[in-house]
Image 1 (cartoon, rainbow, N blue to C red):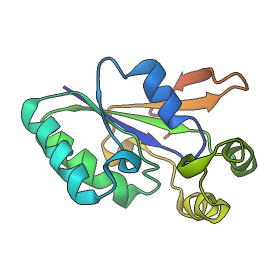
Image 2: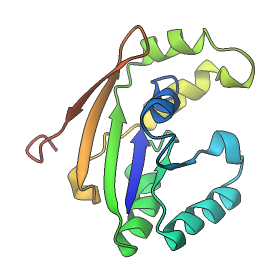
Image 3: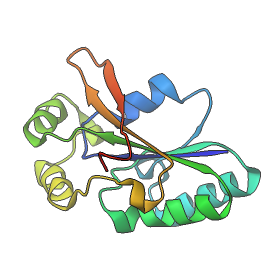
Image 4: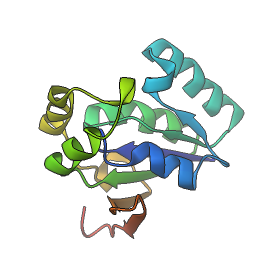
Length: 150
């Protein structure tokens, strides 16, 4: 049983990363699709109850936001893995500008997420943490954090 939490501002590659690495093995919990916290909670509870691996593909910018998922997953004895997506604001704004429709986030939304962003740490309850950077061709570099870095 495994819970994966993504952390990073918009347009840092989180959803693309999910599709490349976890779409065949983990349920995706994502507010862009589910639209409300109520729907998110229904799916989250179903995954916990069914012992189903899942990825929380939201910005999850703060310790407080991540706490809910970590607390539930810990109580259900899930392994908790975090992926922090390098959040360089100017690069994210540039990537976002290539999006269209609802996928294009207002710049003030990206800046607001960046302003409250707290890098995850092992002390929150993560068993494993990774640092992810997106490359120009939508490939990723993934580095595992040691507990000494946190």
